[in-house]
Length: 262
Image 1: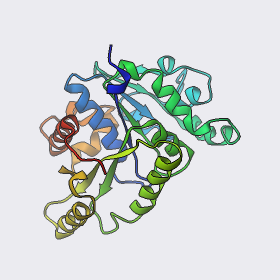
Image 2: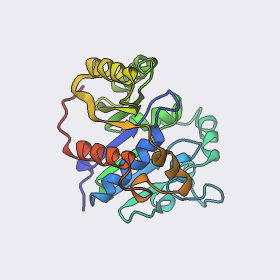
Image 3: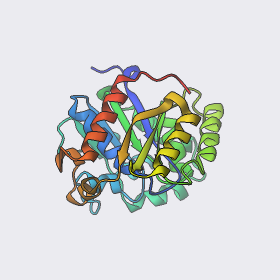
């Protein structure tokens, strides 16, 4: 049995949309699972894109993370298989939007996901939590449940805009709810090596975050964009494409876990 203490629980989060957050959650989880690790992906976004991206129909699900959060289902009862034998998912759909309202006056409302995750953590080597593009109650639940946060940043002019707010939220969570939360790493996405802008952004991010910035850049890649419409991770859509190569390299960095705390 895997000891809970050894389970790495990583929230993939950035309140800015369109930065490749869900793409990263899906493909990193799949690549780590392909390395024969037991992986659970928790879709904590009401859009349910991680769910659809792994080939699961969001409509008509008997139970989702919403049912777990409001106490109508267990994590085991809401967990689904995927096309990757060692990768499971707790799916999401639009019903999750209602959880924020239903939990307004609920006791320990920030700990619902943490308590659910802890109930199954002993079964997995890695648990990835795909947070919504906001700093609301759902993302707060993800940060309280996680031991670290992976931050995707798009290689654009305003890449660091809003990151200060995210870091302030992380520090607030550390102070009040989850003192052991750390930054797992910062991932540069949608990188275009042909442009000076991508290089400038990469240099700026690396200057700010130092060794917490992953060595690999995720490029703009057609296959990476296509894969979700086929309901599968990019390594099962086009193994040799630049997107697959990048996420396999990212998985190696995550598995190596050689970074200093930040």
